[in-house]
Length: 504
Image (cartoon, rainbow, N blue to C red):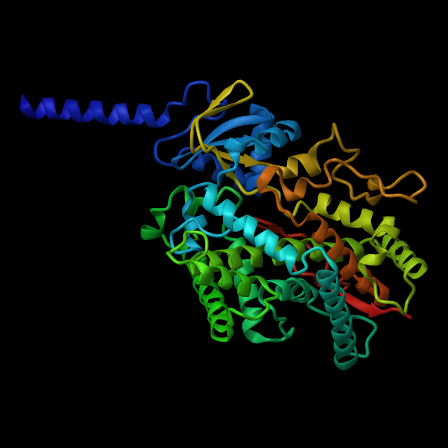
């Protein structure tokens, strides 16, 4: 009798738990039913096998459930947004400025929410404000930064010419331009961040770049399965992606710790400082008591985030430029003609020509739109119970903005959005740039948007103008290139397997 009561009680508890696990919160956005513990992860996995990528799965579900719908990923209530107007409004609101409490977002910074990219709250705001003000003070977006970009572009061209001359006398010479772009772009920014540049063939630096790429390819904008089901790292470390993440994060943490230690050894509190690391250390030295804002862990997290933001997304966009130009020789010829007419063949491309070359700028804008390098914006978190449209959004709900739907799929806004057309950003006579309100979508919305949109555009301009001034980009004639992109927090194009030829 007693055992029967215990079994019945246990069954009631189990069924009550299952009911609560599967119950959709009142007035939460509609969407597919979910299961206990895993939520909709089984559905996402099944649809990824059919449609290929996480962001395409979210777009397909939007066709059934509308531009705002609800999921549960593991234990995380999630709202997916695919409409531009709703996305812009929601992500600009103060209550949606949080970041998810996902495992992967804290794994990179010793289990704490540190840095400026994946943390939130007043401490993060203070670190972010100090970082951006300091970078501007030392030259970000100014002549100092412009000089670093121009110098690095010049060094890149010299390296390519020497490499071409020394390794082949053939017309076509395959070169790993993807990695070179990462090195050059980071060098142009790292002078302001850490006060040094790296040699292109420095083994340690190349290793860290490859680890950074691996890190970003192991989770998506929502955090990936390891954030939704963090306990999987204990029972399936390889399958969950934990092993790969750990193998990337630990050497990077050590690398940034070495950078900080090097600066500390040479640090003079009374000296003039011209880079972020030294100025951050100067603030740390002023603290009379332990500070949650100015400490070495925060500095490491900030370096981690700047390294990622400054190198990966921009270099991925420029890597895809190579593919686009190799496939479009006529467009490449038009760009080279604009360079020859405006800059000439013997003058270095600089920011001074930025507003004088509409076709090059239109090409850059269309590349950012068409490539969808960040198909899903980094997820947000509701900081309190709130509403979105007529829906109730509980505190800690994760918001996932599908930027790809806005930039590449929206046929009501774009004319033939899945066709590469730089002219969509030009006037009818191609003499002026036609600014579009959605050109900044790849950089996000609200206070958490990436502040480097102008810097990104200008850097792309100088580097690509420098390449095309001296070289013609050629496709790979040995084999048919298959576009196998890699999805992570960014959407990475395949390695460029073509070649370059010095212009006559």
